[in-house]
View 1: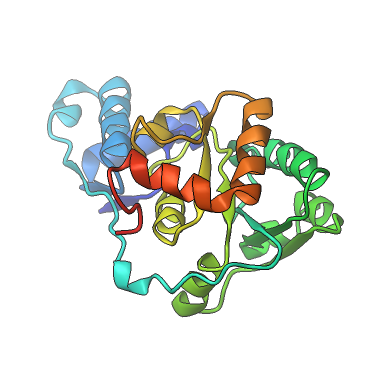
View 2 (view 1 turned 90 degrees about the vertical axis):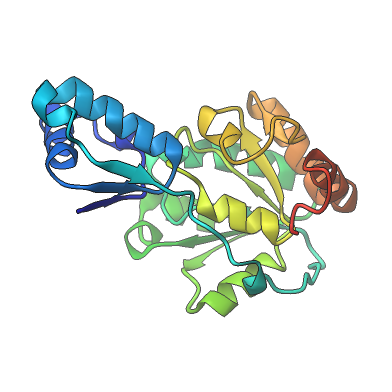
Amino acid sequence: MNFVWWPPSRYTRTADVAALALSCALFPTFCNSERTAREFHEIVAAWTVPRLAERARIAWVNLGVRLKHARPRQEPDVPVILYPAISLSDRKRPDLFLHVVERVAARTPVLVEARLGEEHLVSERAMTLSRREWAWVGPLTASRQTYWERLGRTTAFLATADEESYGLEYVEALLAGVVGVFPDRPWVHAIVRAAHPFVYRDAAEAEAMLHRAVTATAACRREADRSVGGDLGA
C-alpha cells in the first residue's frame, strides 16, 4: 500500500504525476489528512481510466498528538523563533522566512533555531542562515523528549510554506504554547480556526505579527487561546 504524508503538488513532471496516479489507483492509499486524500482522488480521476479510478481505495486520518508529550514551558531570556520545518525546499519558502526574521532581528533581540535533515543541513541556504549572528542551525533533536523540551523553550514560529499536506509540526508547536504565525493559505485553514489572530497576507504583515509575538508573547498567547474558546494547548 501507499502511505502519503506530503502534498501531491511536489510532483510537476508528467511522468511522475502519471506514475503517482497509477500507483494510487492500483494499491490502497492512506493519507495524513482529508485534504490530501481529496487531492489524490482528483489526481487518480484525471490521470487514469475510469475503471481504475472508480476502484481506487484512498483513506485518511489527521495525525494525532499525544498531549502527555508536552513539557512545562520555560521561557527563554532571549525570544526563540523556530524555523518550523526540517527542509529548505522551495515549497517551504525559506527565503521569505529569512527576509522576515532579518527585519525582526534588526528591531529586537531574538534567536532563530533551525533543526534540519542531513541533506538540507549542508545546503547553501543553511550556510546562509547560519552566518547570521542571531541564528543557530543544527541537526534534528536526538529524541522525542528533547524535541518537546525544545518546543517548551520556543517563543514563536513563522510558517512560510506554500503547501503542506497537513502540518503536524505546526500543531505540536501550538500545543506546546508556541505562538504560530501563518501565511494565508488553504492548508493553514485546515489546521487552525478562521479566528486565529496571526495569519498574514504579505511579508509586511508577517513582520508585524512576528515582532509582536516575540515582544508581547503573553498577550499573543491569550489571543490565540481565545480563538479556540479556551486553552490552545488543552
